[in-house]
Image 1 (cartoon, each protein chain N blue to C red):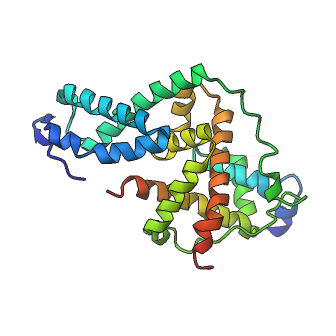
Image 2: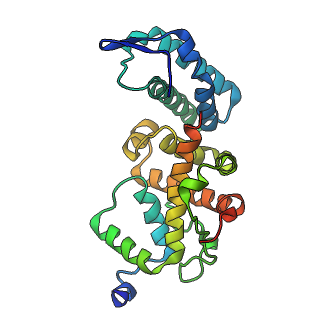
Length: 197
Length: 68
């Protein structure tokens, strides 16, 4: 992870060019989270402007990308709270009956889930990463948003509850649904292509 | 161990085990649940595969995020 940030003592000075270098990355993750090109562009522009104005607060001890990601995360949470307040959905049910069709009457998998022979190797394949992205884009919007905050932005359960006003069990249900939908989606064009072990 | 695994009170269905596998990606499970899950994974290939799929999802997302 390179940047033009130069550490001078405790603080670092950042050139605008170094911030602009991160735009592509920030757009990629903002787009996955927000699913709206214009909203992502507005958000990332705000983040870069804010970061430049507050550049004296950047400390060289985290990477520039980490620092910008944290600013973007806060911006996104504000946006989501606003959107979710304006368009509330009913509290998701417990999820006890979720994915019943995947299981037989004794509660065991009706079909054997694919064995991933070498996760590290698979995750180096561009094709697999694209399949993951495509499957995430297909998730129901809010489930996808909670999941991407968790896995891409690194929010933990406590933060998700606090930031999004969800209960712990609701967060667990959303993340469970996301993972089960993703694994089903990837059985078709991701895991499924992996060599059987 | 197998007789213990067959004990009805301790035995998880795959559906229950999958929920715990997901939960475990987000925080440490309480002792009892952790043990029941571990027991389940000892004899269940399906859930062992699912566990690996969940790990792969997490790793894949990190690789996707950091790829450039």
